[in-house]
Image (cartoon, rainbow over all chains, first blue to last red; front, side, top):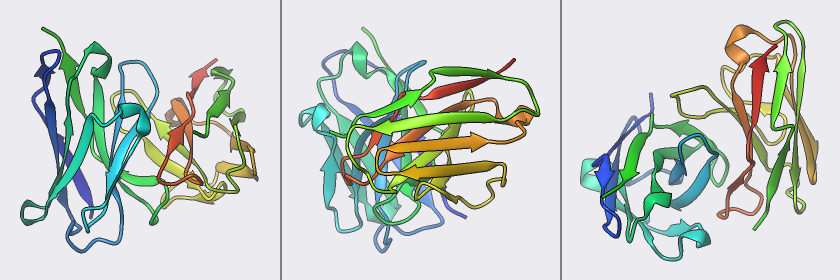
Length: 120
Length: 108
């Protein structure tokens, strides 16, 4: 059974970099045929796709993040991570990691989400 | 960017009645359209993909239709557990994925 679990600092200061990790069980990131992604949701608002990564390390990002987001793999730990730099209060959100249901399709498996608050 | 517009923003429905939710894409997305359900404090749950294919375990009272730019999610005979926020998402323009703003289905 595929499970994803996000972890992160909870509170980050403006202008700093937030680092989030998604730990995966039930599938191997190094050999998976699926894409793994990050999606966020500001409190009380809708969903925003941040980016995705494949087992080869290939990445694609939402252009609206203007190069602030970086997704990477740690295959020995079966984890993938998101780094978002130069954060502002607008980056306060619940951050979800997910895997697509069918390759290059919608997200069928989601973590429970982790809240990141940007505040001094 | 493909902009997804959902309507209405909210919908009040009595248990046992049906609900019809709409999603419009700013450009053709073929049938590469998914619907998600999100309850408070939970992650979104995939309900429908390919515009009309139910994901594993999704009850038959959820049905999706449409193609091109106009899509509909119909929930027949609403149950108490169906009151939630529903999002559509296009993946025709993969990897540039976009979500709609959501429709809240509330108890009348």
